[in-house]
Image 1 (cartoon, rainbow, N blue to C red):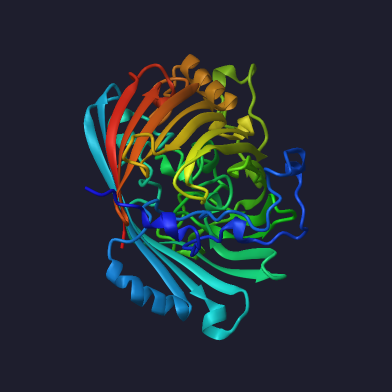
Image 2 (image 1 turned 120 degrees about the vertical axis):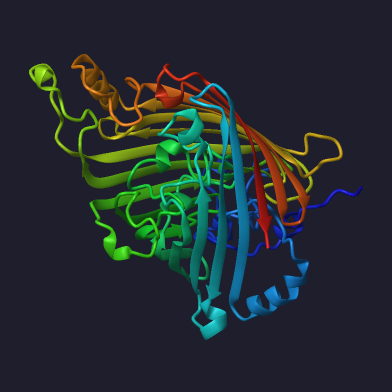
Length: 468
């Protein structure tokens, strides 16, 4: 039987943005390179244009299940409107360890809308983007594993069951012949900063590492906040993005529509610099992100209330802001079946650090790989494996230990002083037809609940992604 070639393999040669603009489509302000100058000039980034790649799309199933819509899609796109409708279902079962054996299922339906105002009204460089989503199901971490800090199933989130959640809605404007780009509106921060297509092939890490997306200020899909980002490409191999965003509780406005219900506590000031070399004669792409975010919110010391009997020995710090530093890197190590940036195998690594006095997770480290075409006869299957380690903030750990000394309860869903946890995740993605991806998944969590009380948990599951 012939192998179904993902439509995206060809489509990436001339990409159509579905959500956020591809940073590789920005033109350089200066026709030169930065750090890539230190590499072999004949092999590296001295090129007229970058190789094409999608910056972010909500699904990874290339192509569409209904090819009959190709003509209507083109008709609408020529007139300024494009869309994508997708289904993502995740069933994860805890088969050993944790608090109980059992399976949980969650899904999302996503409708991505893009309006090209230049084609519609002649407004050069203007566009509007809106994402609506329906989510339902249960979280296996809560039901069967016993962890309430990290979600082992990607789709489930704080938004709960919503029939029509408004995720993103923002306007975009390009300036100086596509050399500067500005987004303004309600935007999910971790779909702009600290993310990548490769991270979102994993469940736990999508759309950004948990130590990043799990803290207020770094709004996570589908939770959007008011703000905007300026993007530019100073040289051909550098992308810089920075902005200003509202900082508010991640659990407020679960529908995405009740904007007046949100109470801003401060502003988030992120900046990210990405170096994008193309190494060797086959132009193997790499993405090296250096990011920082300052949240002006005054957060309460994670140590919590000091027991009366210990007040003379310990004290609570005054509220303070939170700083986040992160480094994320991926580098293609071989190319296979195409010239776009997903056509090959990658090595990946990252590190995130948050101010420990006011953060649940002070640190996260991850290493992994994402490899294409390992099995003969299956050139477009992708295998991924990642190990990630999470360190609980020192002040949160201290507060829990003080409660234990005083004989007080540790808190909801906490069975002892929490210190760290680690997760091993692996998947095998199979594009069975254009627009349909089936992905068996495996997860192994060490120290669920960030303590040694709950046995290590082994999970197996299946993700299915379909594009209309």
